[in-house]
Image 1 (cartoon, rainbow, N blue to C red):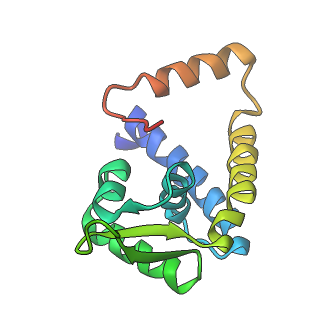
Image 2 (spheres, rainbow, N blue to C red; image 1 turned 180 degrees about the vertical axis):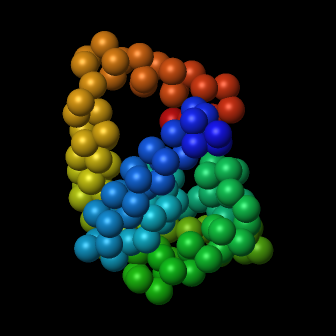
Length: 140
């Protein structure tokens, strides 16, 4: 019976979509989810870990682990805030900045794959429904 619910269908779609995205990110040296943190830095470099946690809506250990992996890969570095030395800020390296275009291309291709069998009206409706979902917060 559970497999007949809309929730089940949504979870299956989300997992398949995320697995496809994750596979496309591997050649860039990224794990799924890391691009979301990088995206926040592409929008505003030099955020604090607390700001990243708030923007991503995830638990602190998730951001800590993601930052550690991104640092080891050479995509970000942490540095004390010059005005508040006890506050650490996260900055992109040149390698981290260089990932923006290929990651955005992957996301656009993945979107196209997801939407390829929908009419333009269906695409518009799905976009409107998902962006208007009350439990989701989209950060601009």
